[in-house]
Length: 282
Length: 346
Image 1 (tube, rainbow over the protein chains, first blue to last red):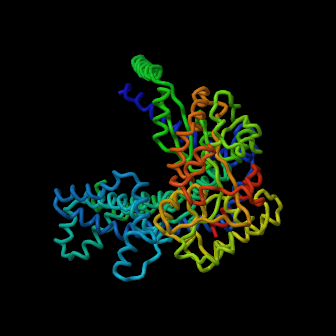
Image 2: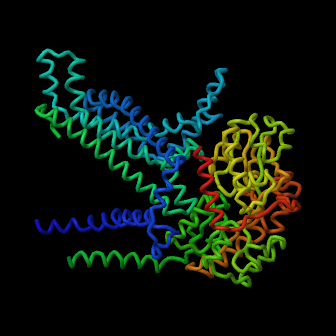
Image 3: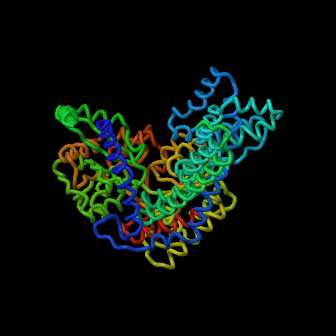
């Protein structure tokens, strides 16, 4: 057994080199000023103070707004899909799951790019509308396009995690519910849905986190004027060359994300505690 | 544990064995869609070498990549970035005697202020910035407004502007009659206010890469564009035209340079010479649409029957005293970048 313990070492090296050191560098940059030479650092809080400018706070609020809407839409769309998949016979389940994951085989950039040709002013949809003698709709570079792009990209994560929770559910509990006289709606609302909540919550984490920090989707579908927090960070590193300010924004972002993860986990634990005795399998 | 070390050593040995057997390699870092790729394979065949060719989409992202420690043998930055790299000792002097084809280059494009006597750079492409418009949808009379065409409420939602702080501030500064290199607070602020106004009036889309395709497909009626992209767009779509406002614009030049830490300096010189070869330059400019510094290539494409015959965008004007190139000024650049984010985040 001792020999196996050694196997953990490469992972330690990996975690240290790939996560711990970069994180420390970000912290160092965030609290220092002047350029990229770490050697001559001067400590400062200016980068954080700079962030609390109404312009940047507005960008942060907007990012959260977009991410929350995206997450809600993913739940509304993802739950019924996951429920349907979990309730069909096993062969069809495999097929449907394959269909859900299949788009992910194609690079996300390519998929997002193709939305441009579908949504643009003279694109597929508007071409069709004009063909029907309807007036074209402006879709590109709007909230609609960005949120659509996000929902499209992140929906599979929601479906799969809800599906996992539903599929693992002990069918005997549902039968018991029927035996005790509950009808289908009651069974769903009082038994199935509460038991699947942990799937919904891990789905929320999987969707909300990338949605709040993505910069590719808003850049492509929203244009350069569609500033979300991810774009702001990218901009500071790539265009402005202000690594210090960029790091400070990343840190603020990380703190907010950690806080929201902590809250969801607490919420998750509460649910598990209240539903104990329900024979939760995981 | 010993076995593990042995295994790692073996892997390393085989890897290093591979590299010694390989051909010489030249690492080139250039703008996206900025070369006829067959030119690269011709270079590889001619000198029996491998070319590793990477793209960037802005001078800034190129610089960031260099900062991260990436090494290249050839870069193709814009004049002000060349100036910056020289001032930071990041380039090495080139040996012009190894680049006989420099004789093919238009003399007016050599010995420019960003690199006197071409100690560090040789030209690759050059051009200016203007406005592409759809002749069917834009009223010719509105062009009289010059850059302020972008502030005409008639064209709300119909405008693309490059998402690059230096270029957008150039537009506002020229519209207001200032220099593109002004450091005067009041002038910069006035330009900032104008940009906010344009943002509010016409809600332009700030784009980079999708602009060329979008204009060829007439997605929008107006786009701020580099002359070379305009030449390409005009050659693809007859409804498009190009004009450069009389109030002045930015004249720029992208040049080939060799970084101080280049691994293959000799081959880099061969690359420079190859790109300035008359036949190669002709193919390259035909494909890309940007203006070649090689006289014969330039003349061939604008001559009757040439690919860009009659396309005015291919011929950047040199007679307007209001046209300027950008100086490199770190503080100014940071200030403009910060203001530009504020415009976009409105």
